[in-house]
Image (cartoon, rainbow, N blue to C red; front, side):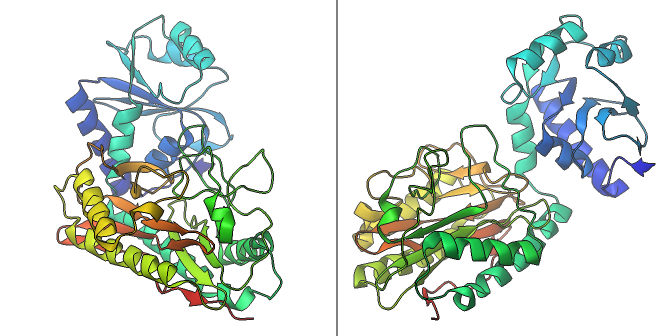
Length: 391
């Protein structure tokens, strides 16, 4: 038999307490979790089933697969209806469900299983809880950052003259997997897809994508229209690498830009502006700061540099310069002009002020930071300058 909960007793209790604090503020007396990311946050593992958390008392874990898990509150079930029988005498008032994520058929089945009690959406509540990382979670992100940075250090050494963008990306993926990358790029919602990240060379960076990503790219096939498209890496091109940093179940998000020979002075200027924005935002990003204020700071720096035309895309612009990251790549807070998020100590944020320069490609950097009392600490420590690829 294997323990269900893989966290320490102290860490498990801390995460339960954070969820219950949020439940109390929202007047939610009980909730039912089934999303993989939320189950992983709560227990340290993914399983097929549900976690029932009351405002008080013992959580229950309803498991369908895998077999052989044990622990306090573990109940094996074959179908959701069995949960209703177990909880029939304890359900009191609305039951919180992840209604942003559950399919309609699952909601209707749960409705019948629990005797048609009212449901309330707790997806936003759980996203807010996960936005503030515990010290243990931050250490997992930090470990990913160390591995991620090592992978990027190998990029100049695996490049070969005559490569296409896709060929270089595949070699980076190989190095990352050998370094321990899990390969999974977990994204909240079903409207964004990507495989192991993005590599953009030259004019392909100008191609818009249907996904809400900072940069685009045509992709190799219309079924996945983002990233590398088979472009030959040539002199004068920038090579922007934004690859998978999931080594621990907690991700870092990092972009670095490489070049073949010399690139235009405009590209050099824009790349330095990206570095300057990251440093300024990291310094200003203390707890209590409105996220939109950080976006405004970046936007002013871009305007002062005369680079607004190229900022966050050329033909299609992204509406943000940063986002929370952790178990999923698109967590809270969001650094955007209309964001209502307020920075909190323990937020982990990826900042990615990028530019697309005609005839050169995408330039700029992205780092993952943790919000501390005196500003943001960088967890992705690869060199930030534009590095020439070695033949």
